[in-house]
Length: 438
Image (cartoon, rainbow, N blue to C red):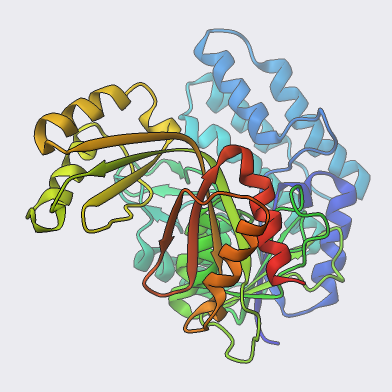
């Protein structure tokens, strides 16, 4: 199929057993030439992720408490993998350097990145691949944003020297200080995407502990069907509403390069997973691709006669929301009404002040506030310009006595977002799923 970049998450490199699975996957396909790894994750319930242990070391040091015992646990984890796999690698100097730098007040980002660093060295030795450190290759500006063009150039130049390589995820270098800088979250996913773009990969494989995306949360819909193919736009809509398998920032670099992403399961490599592509497949006859949602939103519904003729009304409303440093989710509007939907977490402790400002500055005829609202998105490029989709969705909800409190449809006609009471959240998702999967 062509050159592949394979990223393996924490659960896929948690111990020697998982690394054996990783090796079999990579050796099965010689096109998997570049590998990105996370720090080892949990091996079992109650276990600790290596990154969490490193954060704990930092907390201990900040409180002037020795962290030698915790750091030894970290060293023992990696040493156990070395012994179990009979690897010819000596990590003693690495352990000593990390320990010494920690004692001398090493920056937080350096400390928490060492899990990925050591994981990549172990994986490179086991696979017989070159180890390529991402320090100095992935470049962050002073605001913590990746400098995409410079990073692409540096990665391309370095990886051209290596036929096969393993790279640590999660970190790069701060251009201003020269120190290690980590991504805020999901960094290994993003690293994999940057590597895929730099080597002009044909596919970016993201290996984790799930076999791609399902049409709905399996905790709500038992036996939810897998999604074989999904477009970037559909994924963005579903991820926004909580369906998260891949960090959304990991999509951007490969989307620019037109590289498909394949979400795969390390524990079930025979599963084909989900392929994420730039465009929707016109041969795909599905009406909907997936359903996702979140609970706990507040709706502020404002009524004012002839609101549509009052120039600047919505702008002033959003200015009030901005003044209180609140992010909003949606703004459904009518001729005399406008509603603003906000996460309960965003507006907690601020609602009374927001309502007071709206009354003073906008002088509405009436304001209603609805709390404990859930938002559910039904997403699919197959919905566009297809008659009867909305009728099918709303009829199914009505038959199951589920009251719709809000409706919002994007201009692309690719998604329909409804608001229901929190108590109806799960039943609404099941109802929509069954309506389109009879």
